[in-house]
Length: 350
Picture 1 (spheres, rainbow, N blue to C red):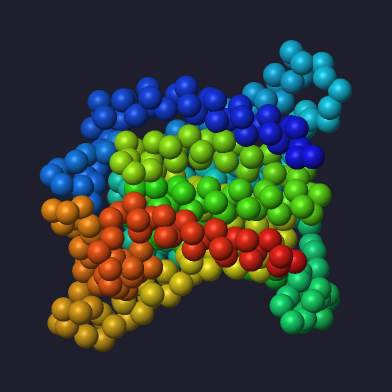
Picture 2 (picture 1 turned 90 degrees about the vertical axis):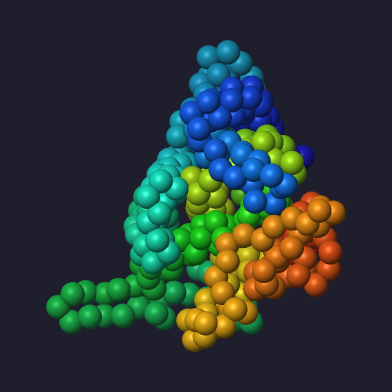
């Protein structure tokens, strides 16, 4: 049986987000927090920065649900009465990435800083993580003691320290940026994120390890509602605030559950998308005057509703470059691809 507290957390967050979302969307429009949807005819403007709504629902749920159960419902079930260190750290990581996303939305901080600065944002989580023996493909579970390095006059740099202080921040930063990059169509980022989040919590349930998944449960509930408003034809977009915060939460959850390699499998479409983009930028740098490698951010929509994309150098453009497809059809194909790899990820030990 699935965890009752986890289910309650999902439902509470979902209802809260459902109640607040119409007001939030209206306020964003009134304050001119809108962006153009380039894949709709005409100058269609959508409310932006919906990630704020998701964060509000997550934080409020994590605070209120234990309080409500303590004050109102004297039920005979186990429920977290206090914040755990991992919950607090995960929320802090999400908040730091969201703040950075807000800076990027308003200041355009640049791609290079997205690689360096976010590394420090994972340290609230790193500080409360305990060491573990990771599972490695073809090698099984390995002991990190073999990677200990003794530096004269400094001390011993253990394998566990390298995993937690070096690999974990890089892992979370990469996942957050992968999620931020695999976007651009209505419901693409939010839908694929929702699929990955659901499979992470499903895998945790299969492993009997849901104790640290309450923040992820709250995020799933909020993301369900946001996805409903973000799917085609979208009413609101997440902005970098949402995509980076959700991506950081996914990376953090994978780290907390020790699903480093399972996460790589689940996020394989995002990884392929990133590699395609790196190839595109590399070729553009080598051949800046060749129109085949010109850097273009958006395609456009034809009169029949199908997409006209400038190249096949990102995953979301690959199919519509070769076939006449609508935005919905492309997004559904990305969902299916993500679903397949998430199913594979269920059977990867770590």
